[in-house]
Length: 213
Image 1 (cartoon, rainbow, N blue to C red):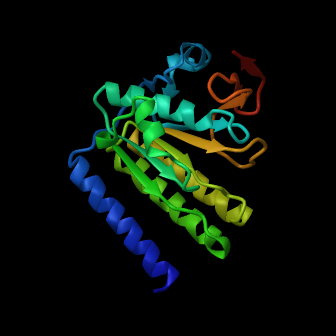
Image 2: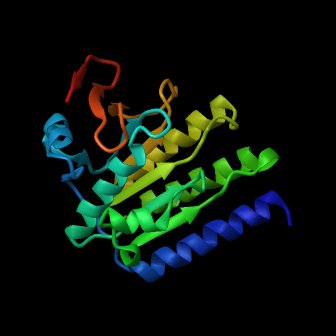
Image 3: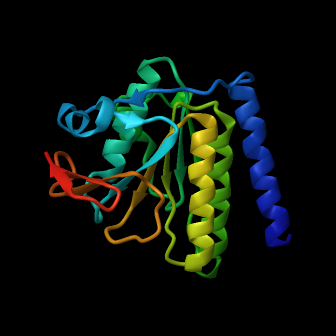
């Protein structure tokens, strides 16, 4: 089976799941709380903005996934559906449930990295994220897709497509990435430092100055 054929199959399966979950998506406005009062105090409007991408940046075990799952939980508590694109294959379902996320209202797209197929899987993950964001079926979508194997020009073009999809669907898009990752078209970026359960958080507005919590 060719790579292009498999990618089409993955995306079609995803579209079918979206249609089953919510047949009448509606564009949202406002914010999705993070689940941490100190972080919400940093964010304009008191949460992650709908219709745009917020970068959540940190090293391994910095708490990126925990913070993203907190926001997904908050969106669920407001009655919404949420999704997580797990490009690393590291999302642990019992930990997700322990953080209060309802698996029945969480769509997980898992694309485990595997040697020479890393670039192909990353691109498929980005296409899947675009489909989720543009659908409008989800209030918040977390995306954890390693980009190191994707040529920079292609990665940046696909990230711009993600930004447009988030705007179209009115979704709070949460991009989880390492420090220093270039090219993310996000107006806001949270930089996490310290232990994963309660890391220090710094807000960066585009290329401007940051604010800490």
